[in-house]
Image (cartoon, rainbow, N blue to C red; front, side, top):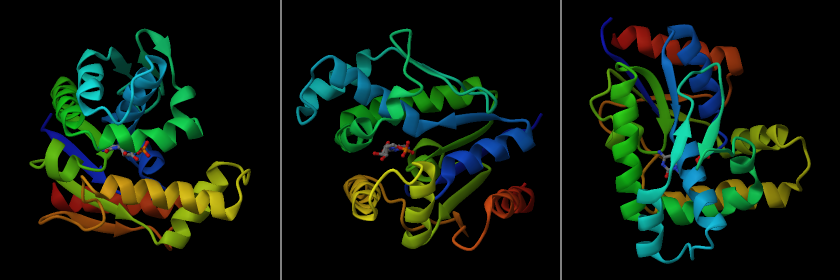
Length: 220
Ligand code: C5P
């Protein structure tokens, strides 16, 4: 078939992952969660006792990292060195360390290369999501979307996702601090030229999926 690369960026709590996965299913396309790759490298570094502020060491660890991940929207798994880390990469400790990897430019360069290869390997039928997909990883994608949501909506969704186990202050600190750190190296708050913004603040899950699919069908 024709190439259909759908690039979706957005901040944490925008619903990016669950929306992108469902859009991939409906399009019968592959799915790439690039955040899972940053998280996998973070776990690899933590387990190897690497100082996350040491850019040279983090870059080397990223180049050496043996990461495999599912590109099917129907199967979620991530392996580091052959070990299943699907659950482990979602732990709060990983979430609070991941920005250190994401702000190491050499680590980004390596992961961008791998992501571009995975997109090619998909036969160019893929929904890829992250922070720099519309701008760096796949700037020539057929469809480029920035999925945003108000701060209030993002905090509410993350809270529900974590089962209400965190105080409002802790949640706020986690979600917003990570975005501030990430923003120092990638701009996912404003849409780049040619990128369509979908604001999900007042949309439920199905409405957001439809809004994204509308953009896909309008631009292809
Ligand atoms: O999407 P998720 O919250 O799982 O991403 C985890 C982290 O990975 C982000 O906070 C960010 O530091 C990093 N990331 C990135 N570029 C991407 C995807 C994720 O820097 N394309």
